[in-house]
Length: 429
Image 1 (cartoon, rainbow, N blue to C red):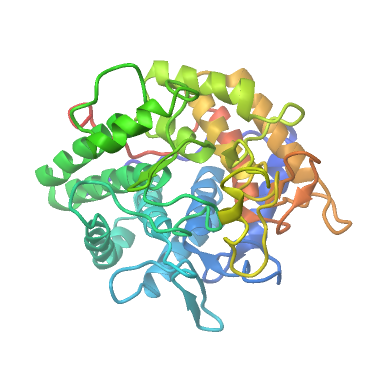
Image 2: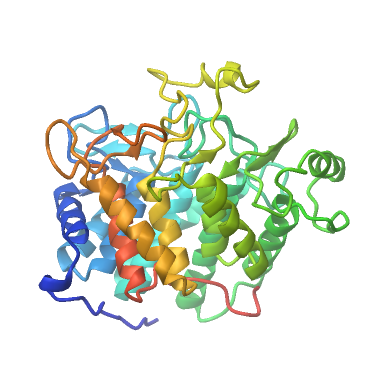
């Protein structure tokens, strides 16, 4: 088993943008002996190692060429594996010093498991660290089994409960597109690991990957064609198609459940659909057009988590305003309800850059750095969790590690680096 190791061709100190330097400095501040914390602050529980945040910060660390940061990426994954639950669940977050472990709030966090698998594969591919991979195989196999159980009806898509992923106080659940895309990439990672360990293809897994990709394409993109062969539920699909005139062929649907489809634009999911090569060029162009004409902020080139904003006059407001654990955070233009996220925008910049749209990607890099530089609590470079979608003020937790990760990922991808090294072979697509 072998992997080529590619060291990034880093720019000289004099040519590195200040936003990139500040972001790398924050990644170092997030680095501990046990792994990356979400933020180096005592605020609430952000000074913990999170499955989701830790994986995303690790993706950025792998692009820096910094051996210490790469080592912390490995420690992050190992710590999360060490606190794996009895059924295979990866912690939502863990404080190894205090011994406090959370697998979620009112429900578990599905995407922590998916991001964990993706981070394992990306670390291994970037470093060629075979002993690391072999050490993690038992944890990986337990997650694989657990994710299969979460399909419930054994029909290819995992079911996500309310509050079950990063949008943990927002109104989406069921067959959430964001999680299905991560599931696809996680299965690609499993296939790559199997090939390396056994020197052969897991044909059942290859078939599962192909099936899942077709399921996503068939069920989350509405166009003028007949009902697809891979439709999950024909009656539900036909009802969704009839109600989707305003978003048909414009962007990917956020989710569906037994109660119907969600029609709000999920920025993270739409970006991942392109990054993971589920979208074709026509779909990418349509989503780009929607983002730049309707979803993206007019004054600061950042993406909202979801669009449009849910307001008190909207039908969904009644349910949204009771969706919180401690305090309500989703007022209009705040948090997931129209808040602008450097982290999500960073992934979009990576996608644009790899597609050769470097002018637009550069605009987003500049906007991310502008947002990260906004002061918080009187200190420059606040690296806010998100930016208020109307007032353009920094909000949420300051010195957020994945806001720094966004700047690193976007800058390095703009310079030619690859964010996700694991993908399908042509035969599997």
